[in-house]
Image 1 (cartoon, helix red, strand yellow):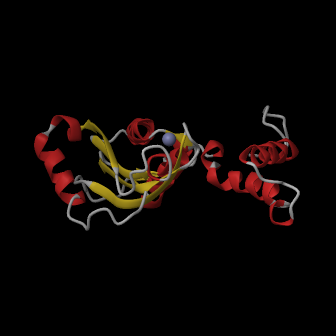
Image 2 (spheres, rainbow, N blue to C red):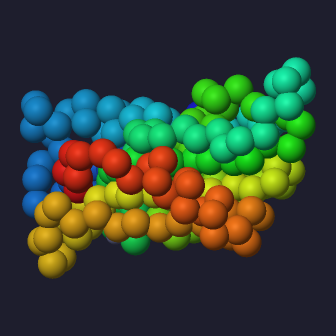
Image 3 (tube, rainbow, N blue to C red):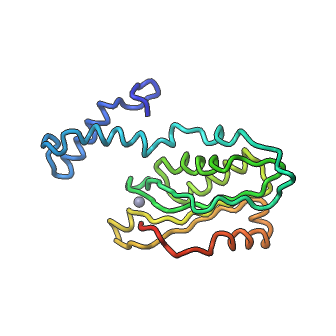
Length: 203
Ligand SMILES: [Zn+2]
């Protein structure tokens, strides 16, 4: 989120002015001491919270390794911390993602899978779309024999407002290739991600 407006984005000053409006809208006084620097802090923190808009997920996956001695079993990155933001209420979606693929001759550095999760999570999202975007991108770039993405997350728009139901997690999955077509492969994956303590995160 650069300060320049060449890409049509508002300036830092405009973003700060918008935060001041919301503070007044909420009923507070943006000129009181405790809030004086808040608009600048909020605007800066958006750089971090929404860093995904400036990340190209495809570029993250372009470097692969082919010397894998014929490894052709499931590669699973389990329990990736997920921090995203509900596009309807702009409040956090917190949970974890499990990302798996079945390599076809080449593999990618495992940290890259976590970075792809972040590239899509650090945007305004709904969980269903986030799940599909991660899986489809890995599928398109790596062209493996299968991709599976499972996300479990709590939505603060449900826990701290609205129906006020904390402790509820939403689970979404996207299965492609062998994970979709072969029941044994799908079962093997699910057995790899299920055994763990229940619901250790708080929506
Ligand atoms: Zn929401």
